[in-house]
Image 1 (cartoon, one colour):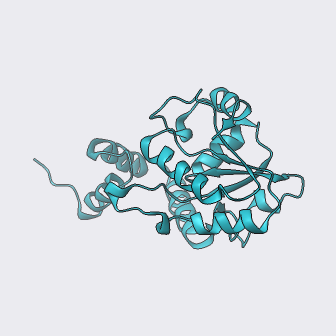
Image 2 (image 1 turned 180 degrees about the vertical axis):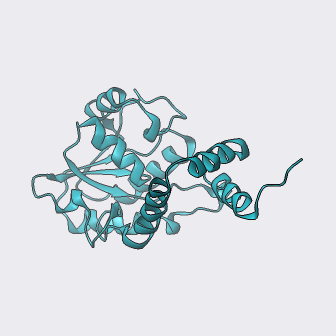
Length: 199
């Protein structure tokens, strides 16, 4: 059996470390990269380098940004009185694509998961509480994933915010328990956002 070159083997190993990519998928991707024109392959590597060098977390909401503030926080037309709390930037993108939410966001950068040694102090919960204390929000929408960890995170945050004059709501359960916002149909997300309920 012929051996792969060291560089191809290394690329397959690196690709297989990506989430959801097994060995076979990594091999298919590697061979695809070898087959495309050189300019296309280099465009991919350049985009990876550019993202790693230029993208950071927004100083306000922790969304992905290329400066101190993300596009959402910079937009003066957004509803400054409503704050939607999500786990990851990709959840924010999913809600934005639904087109129903026009307020501000706060990205937790994860969820409380004791079995994985992820506690509240490893998330942006303190910054969230600070925003609510200093801001003039009328409503905070908990849009964490409808999983055990997502629900536990929402409960923890709602307890921290219970003494402040802000309405706490949760997305309606059109989103089934155990599902992930990133993969949820935009119509279901729209219904869940418009049908949100008090915590």
